[in-house]
Amino acid sequence: MTAGLEAENAVRLPALSVRDLRVLLPDSERDIELVRGVSFEVAAGECLGLVGESGAGKSLTGYAAMGLVERSGLRLEGTVNVADVCISDLGGRRLSRIRGQRISMIFQEPSVSLNPAFRVGSQIAEVVRVHRRTSRREAWDRAIEALRLAGVPNPERRAREYPHTLSGGLKQRAMIAMAISCEPEVLIADEATTALDVTVQAQILDLLRELQDRLGMALVVITHDFGVVADICDRVAVMYAGQIIEQGDVRDVLYRPQHPYTQGLLDAVPRAFETAAVVGIAGTVPPPDALLTGCRFAPRCPYAQDECRVSEPELMATGRDAMVRCIRHSDINLPGVRRAV
Image (cartoon, rainbow, N blue to C red; front, side, top):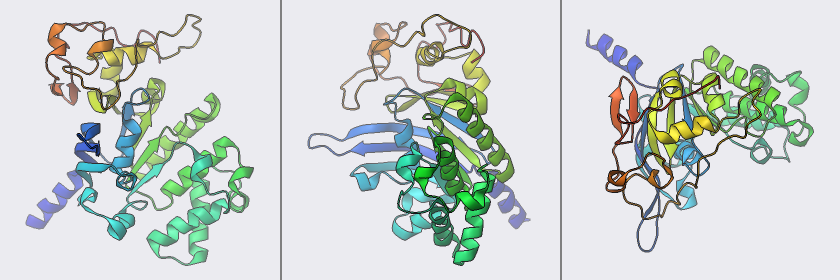
């Protein structure tokens, strides 16, 4: 009976759990917080979107979850769990065994991430050999199968080609093949479609959905594009200045946003068949070392009042799976998406 309960509890564990994640840049006077107490969970088969402007801390959060920031001189605090394993407590070889096998990442620019000196298949096969201790032949066969899963046509031939011979879309598919080659439980996609044209972007999003369904992965999509979020994600966490300022079900956030920044992002999304100029959010994201009091969005917020500049708001629950960091969320009525994103 006890064993059965333990197995049931293990099944309920989220595939990825991030708790009070902080990334700090040590400074002579004070530590500068680049990521400020970020928490979220992603279940197996679920897709969470991290959305926000450049400088919001999205990619850094993804890198921190992968354990890739400390070599840059940054300090990581908080906990990151992949199912029942706390990877934020691991280091060296123990972390390397988890990273790439149980949690993997698609990087933003495949032309930089793929080594131009080695054939595509060899680079994927190397990942397989490191984590699965297979023969060269078995690793090569797995690399070809991963390319096939990633939708690369004629994967046997493409595996023998060098990255510079591939188009942008094929390079991205090769990166996806590398990321899924060991069938990870968690896949983080960092701006995986940003550099692609609209048609190829749609194909890559369809591919990520298909792979998620087939492999049962938890998927974290890092993007600045609410259109991508609407297309692929189940839940969304909106980031601003290193913090999550709103989180909830995608449809709720799209049609009933609670934070003015979220509304600003929605208003900035270009829409088909509209000729009017896209309305951006006035101002810029404050630098991490800015000494601000109160809400960090207040200097740009059209709804800000004196009380907003007094103390920093907490991230508060406002409903099932819904959270917001705004003391005026119940006083303001935001329209949300006016047309299809």
